[in-house]
Image (tube, rainbow, N blue to C red):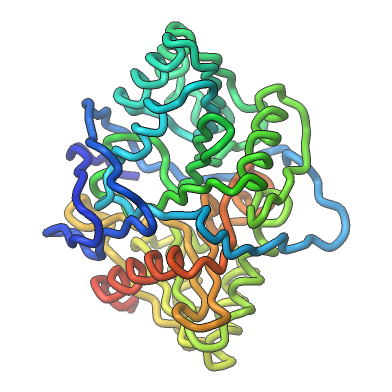
Length: 369
């Protein structure tokens, strides 16, 4: 856990920032608009165990669909892309905004949500209370006092999802929490999804979650949900790799995922893992390295990028390439008990963008020893 006090930065597409390992990518996107507003300081929060699952999956779990998402997906790489595009989504809303967020402390976003409600937009927000009620209480009070319909996520379940949907047309499916103090120094991705099937599935799930009604989330065209299909989907991406596999995550605590990465390396796949150093994962790092996985780490320091992204890229640039990116950490809680959301896709532009960032991050980190 650390605190970042530097303001978020908005820069151009594909421009490297001094002092940041990795590159800026806004794949398939037009300029995001300007970043604005002040920022709060907040701590880095992880998705942890919940006492009650949202839904209990029965029998074999399907990996769900995978789609090219042609023309409907784009990706923002943070911190270089900045948060301006997300603010512009909120400010451009005409009828509805649905936001599910693990932690929210961003005065710009909060004020924009309040302004949207004031101009007649139906703004609804779900905030986690299982682990983050204390952190989210000030935001809850502000929003509820300014015309926003805000509710706590169901008690006993960690809502680690980070998704913004506007006008039932566009969903931003993010790996990042909306904590402005973290934006400038944290590696994250936001997939901007305009697939009708995906957006409809996200809204259907939001409606049930907002009403505290249990639901098995619809898969849409390529959605990866916890606790229903996330582990199976991530394992499917890993299993599909024949040549290369690039991975970023904040946690390495799920033995099934680590075993799959080890198996990939043993069958000849060049597996690269980039994370922020954390002693809790050293035994997993050692096992991965022994199996032939190359593990590179950044120090847990405000002077270097913090790896908060959750992404797996298989065979980038090849005909059978595919990608997972989402809110899911590699932990049993995140994959099998929490509410989480990600995407599994074969979209070439999105994969190229994420792969370039992961490659640069890996090159800038230090081999585990």
